[in-house]
Amino acid sequence: MAYGQKILKGDAYKRAAIKRRHIRIRKKVAGTPERPRLVVTRSNRHIVAQVIDDLKGHTLASASSLDASIRGGEGDKSAQAKQVGALVAERAKAAGVEAVVFDRGGNQYAGRIAALADAAREAGLKF
Image 1 (cartoon, one colour):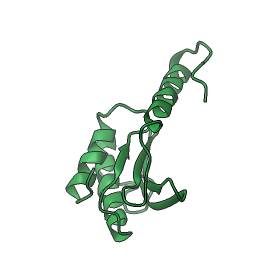
Image 2 (cartoon, helix red, strand yellow):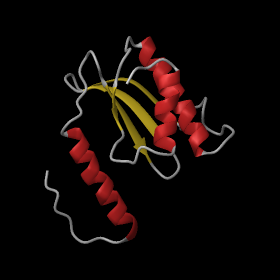
Image 3 (tube, one colour):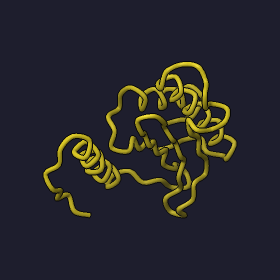
């Protein structure tokens, strides 16, 4: 994949920068059956986390702020991210996953991304 981009403005520039960072991260981070990859995808309103085995190309566990148990809950977006982190860790442990490699998806490790990761660690998932 090429890094070259047209000169963009505003939100398009931000999305292109996130895409470039994600490509750079994915060169180094890969999920194996022993340590699958915990991928975080963030939009303006929602957050999604998936545990993926890259060798097989299978999703082992996933959670989202769109899940019925989280959707419409109390708190801000960071609080929802904490709930998603705890839920994905619970589902991953049920699938037999103890440790993961964290893929922040090109986003900065702050705010909702950090809240999700911290909640997953507290729920017993090892990074």
